[in-house]
Structures are given as structure tokens and as C-alpha cells.
Length: 329
Image (cartoon, rainbow, N blue to C red; front, side, top):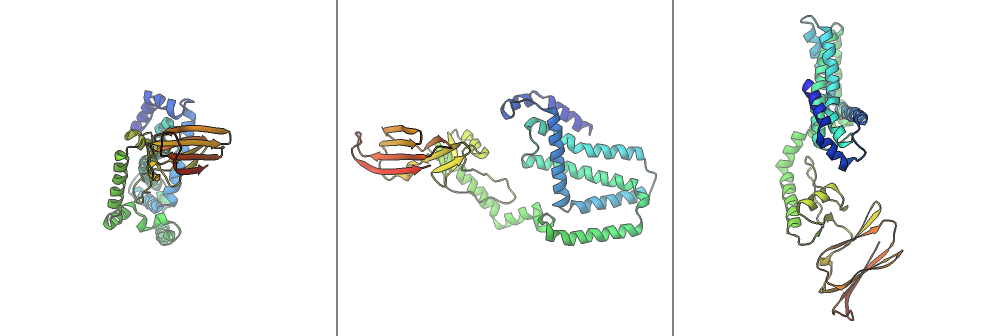
């Protein structure tokens, strides 16, 4: 507990937190909000742990073990009380540095893993200590009824909540996916996508193959939105302007409309290409009789409507039109 508190204090005061906030949250570091976010994050995970998993059974069993341990000797109530309080606060202390650093009450699965481990250890400790304090009230008859209730929970709850099913256990699901070859196939697919991005000569890389995710792995979710986290990360790593999954030429994202022009979609030589944006606010010449050597992404205000006309000519004077296409947005 003391180590966790010291770690939280060091993280809270670390210069990196303030540097990060200049990008994530330029309004500054908010200590009080971080406390509220920590409470929210802990409560959210407690709800998941006790309702979506069979942990409730382990918690009750830990209470009974504590009660029977308490019958063997004298209970130091002051010590037990202090330990219960420290174990109850420990998850909040664990969450605090992350909530402070990211100005948020949730995050990636690496957060979830740490807080769930902390909650399990703290909850079991609290249950054992509470059982010791309540040892006088736990009779053989009560124990029998509690054990029967746990057995009923284990029978009934899997029908109501998937998280209580044996087949929902992550180690089992992972082993099944390994046996079926799903994880291996996913690994090959992801590498194929990475190789495609690396080998693509375009600054704006358009992907047409959607990855089928493995259930127990974090999905490499390259989205249509070029501002998606994975899109930006891949583009940065491979030194590209953008990476995006494309199902159609036009994609609307908030207050921006993206019009994608792909060189591989044309059949003629692209040495002389004119691209004209006919929007509600007027006509804009994107390029006139210039080579189209790379994929192009046009960013247009989201509320605007119109079309992008693409003309492929066979000569430098634009007299012979070989191919014409319009993209409406």
C-alpha cells in the first residue's frame, strides 16, 4: 500500500505528466477530477468483476475461510479494520496516476489487467478479514446455506451471463483458437497488411482487406477514418501521409468529408489528368492536365455537397478525353 501511494505521488509529480497534458489535455493537470475518475473506473470494474464473472463465489468462499480461521484464535479488530480500509483504498491509489496522466476514467486493456488484479487481491483480503470479524455469527447451518447458494449461482448464472460460462474463460478460449488455427491465421493476416503498407509506393495507402480479428487479441483495427488511432500509428511508423481502410470513395468523419481518388481504379495512362471540385461554394481546380502518380485524398468541409470530376486525357492539350469519372459527396 505504501509503495502504491509513493508510486502514485511520483507519477503525479513527474514532469512527463505535464508534458503529456500539453497534447492530451491542454487545460492542465486536474487532481480533483482524477480522484473522481479513479472512483468511476474502480466502480465500473467492480461491477464487471462481481456480475460478469464468477468472482462472487470466490469472494463468499474467502469470507467463510476467514470466519473459520477466526474461530482458531483471538481477533485483533483494530488491525483487521486498518487492513480492510487500506485494501479498499488500494485500487483507487492504483488508478489515480493513470487517470491523472490521461485525463480519463478508462483506457486500454493494460489498464484493465492491472486494476482487475488489484481488485481481486484487495477483495479477497477484505472478505477474509471481514469473515474473521464476523466469525461469531457464522454457524454450521449458515455455512451450509451459503454453500448451497454458491452452487445454485454456479448453475443458474451461466444461463444468464456469458461471463460465468467455462467457455468464456480467456485461457480456454485462447487454447481453442490456437488449436483451430485462428490466432495463427490472424497473425499472418496482420503481417500481410503491414507488408502491404510497407511496400505501397503511395503516400496515402488504401487498404481493401478487412482483418478478421482473433477473439482474445486486441484487434489491429485500421479504420476508414484516417484519424483513427491505429491509422495514425501505422502511417507514422511507415512514414506515410495516411493509412485507411477503403470501402467507398467518400467517407464522412465529423466536420470533414474525405474523397479518395485511387490510381489503380483507372484503366488509361494517367499522364494528363484534370481534377475539379464542383462544390456548393464554387468550382475549384485541384489540378489541370498533370500526372496522377499517387492516391489522392481531398478534405472537404463536412456540410458541403457537390462532386469531384476526374478527366483523363490522352494529350497535353486536353483535346482527347479517354476516361471520365465523378465522385459525389
